[in-house]
Image (cartoon, rainbow, N blue to C red; front, top):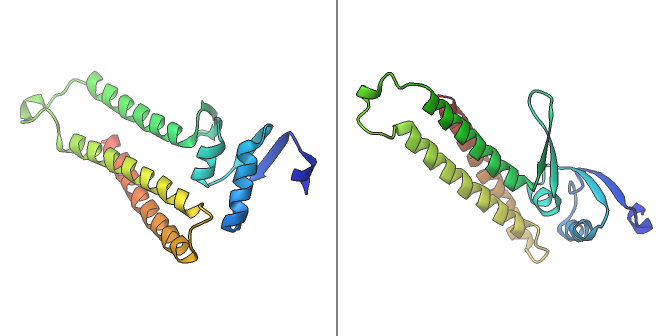
Length: 170
C-alpha cells in the first residue's frame, strides 16, 4: 500500500524473504526503477548487486566502512586488498630460509592462487544460478534443483574461503 503513494525514501529489511518468484520480480522491477533513496538490509547478494551503488559495511571492529559500488565489486576489491597486504608483508620481511627454497613459488602460493581462481568461479556460478532462480519462466522443478545447487555451491564456497583465510594468514 505504501508503494502506491510514490515515496522517495524506502527502508527495506530482507525484502525478498518469503516471496514467490513473480512477486520477487515485480519488487525487483519496482526497486530498480525507483528514483528515490533505498536503505536495504539483505542477504540476497543478487538483489544487492542489482540495486546498490553504495554499501555501508560494518567491520569486525565496529567501524562503518563506506564503499562506492556493488557487493561483488566490494568482495573482489577486498580480496585483492588482502592479497596485496599479504604479499607486501611477505616482501617486507627478510626471508631467513631463502637458501632452503628450491622454487621461487611455494606450494601455499600456488594453493592460494588456485583457491582464488576457484572462489571466483564459484561466485560467478552462484550469481548465474541466482539469475535462473529469479527468472519468472523457470519451472518449479528447476527452481528446486537450482536452489539446492546454490546451497551446495555456497557450502563449497564457504569451505574455500575458510581455506583461503587459513593460507593467507600463514
